[in-house]
Amino acid sequence: MRSNKTAPTSIDEYIAAFPQDVQAILEKIRETIRNAAPGAEEKISYQLPTFTQKGNLVHFGAFKNHIGFYPASTGIEKFKKELSVYQSAKGSVQFPYGMPIPYSLIGRIVKFRVRENLEREKAKGKKK
Image (cartoon, rainbow, N blue to C red; front, side, top):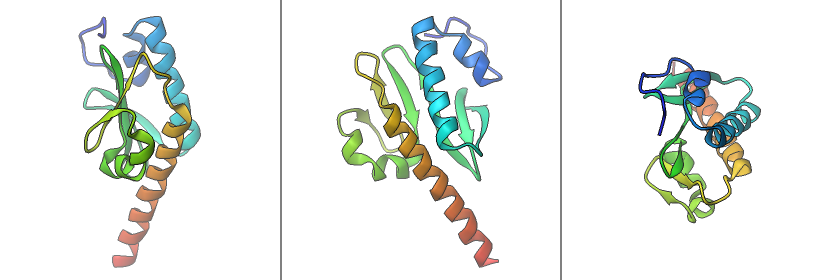
């Protein structure tokens, strides 16, 4: 679906390669993640927009018929009931273009992932 076939080096570059309507969705997801994880860093990983904070938080990306969101298996499991209306796998969920994107749910999942990563980091520190 991307019009540019070279691998993106930034999230801005990634988003710019899509049609306007998809760009708007990707920018709103990016903004939602930034608001939920203000301390997170942005990068491209696996050729997808990625946010990290004490490890990977989430990846997201645009595809032909959906937006893919990758909050790790724990993020999917924790919000399994709310995500049940979407096609999902162990660590991913698909938000079809024909349905409203659940931005508030994305925000809650990201906040959960931040807490999870920070707690894991804290537990590592206690073991030493």
